[in-house]
Image (cartoon, rainbow, N blue to C red; front, side, top):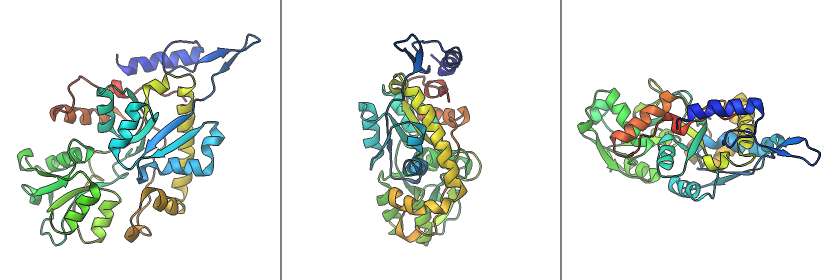
Length: 330
């Protein structure tokens, strides 16, 4: 069933304060004197990776914004996306910081998820991703890389961006040569040693590669908005008494933390260095991102990714936008 229809039903249920069996309603319980009270928020465990995308969550934690909102939030850091996804599938965490491809894979794999907000990537300028050539390379355009091996991970947002950037430059798909190097630090090392002609890199390693002499060929800060980091929340968690209440308050705390970060980004550089493993050579110069207020990913963000996944054979089901996004009452 399309979640956009469900979202309407949930909103109506909220407005009428009627107890229903849908995940999106704020449930009520009867008190001894016959009145009713909103169910208390449920504790939530959020899995993140040590990257800049999670900075507002760490700021909210440090500033006591979760406590102020009356919610119990535990941030769990994983060193790899595979570990994070396994924890979500097993129920060890209730939510995660991830991308749309990982979210679609979890949904299709039997771990239903709702994308509560875009954490980074509401605009193309946020969360830069790019393709760089090795130091000393004569390549200056994406067309120059036709037929040259580009290091990347497969079935990932990185491969998606490479395909989109190369296609936008008119490079035929059969001319895009992919060298699969899943671990980003290893990919960077191979690039800088000249063992890879080019590599797809996310920030902050993209900036590090440039500082160390790699040639920036293209990035995704112009044109189509290709990449988003999202907060995915388990549908099972949202169906718990208090689950939807917690997520609504969590998004309010996110907005407050975003205001704090955006008002003085450099004030949070030390926290970014500590939590996000900002490399030593760029820790003083790396530009801290501007973060978006809570907003769910649009159909224009999600649908092209799903279509790409289906064309690659990564999705066998008829998964669509409405399966990943439902309204979160606030």
